[in-house]
Length: 432
Image (cartoon, rainbow, N blue to C red; front, side, top):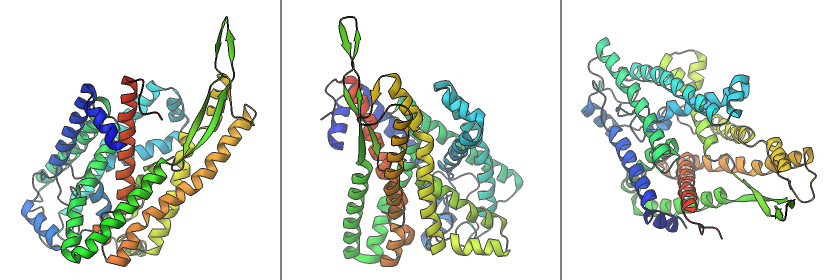
């Protein structure tokens, strides 16, 4: 079906231009991810990356940046500052009445919240860049086990220049994502995350082949295909709640009398819980590493949160995934508002009275279906831990839960975006 969608999209001139525009932005994003920041010793960085394991503290954000972080490139921070800012703004939407009011104002309120997210992104990028350079200028702290000086000149003029360039790089990434959303196929920020993660797959697969041989390589490929198929199956699964609309007589014409449904996906929250949980679990280790403290709390964090295979980390990660799955669904799907809209237009669920009984029923179904969806996220997320035990693959395992959920989820969402745009241009569409 995906091939059919893209084949028809390429036959549509407008969509073809949007797809090529999106691909060009993705290429530009990857190009910026390999350009070193002024003041960074490119040769020293490459030697360090070739000789040591990069699956430690910065493995997650390095994954989201497509390997740009540990290379200290212009786009080193990737999309992470924007993700963190989006998390904060969404949390504040629940806490601060002003933000909640803006969310209900429609397009104008959403534009205001987007503007706040941009400002916060720049502030976070400035802080994260300063901390990253403070760590990187001491040999062995950014890339564990490497004693080479990757920033030879540590004068304040050079440090200020690096901070400015990396912060500007984050601004450019945010702008590129918005360009894809406005002029491309949509879903810009998610597509940039997809680009970063997918770019690391070939190298990871080849490294497994070189270190483990063809047998392990082929076995992992088969496991990866099965994981992708399972993720696609669950991501496409949904509970359809039937909705009927009463007939209305207006003059000599009758309106309504149709039957439709409300689709509630098993994984209604998509990849957002994975990004939220991963980002927040990254913060304690980052703080402990930046402070370079030897206090008991710092030692405990560095012991239990660095490699990501400690039972405490795995348990907390799974619990946070379940929490954020419920949290995100609760702020994106309002049963009371849905029930009220149905009542206004004469819609009802067969066997359920309109009004509060309808909202209670929707909330009941949503809670029941989110339970297996959140557990599914938690199970898929611990796949890298299984890979670590079976193959010793650790961060080099290319079909890890975080990566697969994001790549498959964004791929499906992008295909749906293209499909919906095709349906606007053709009455036939892809409806079965």
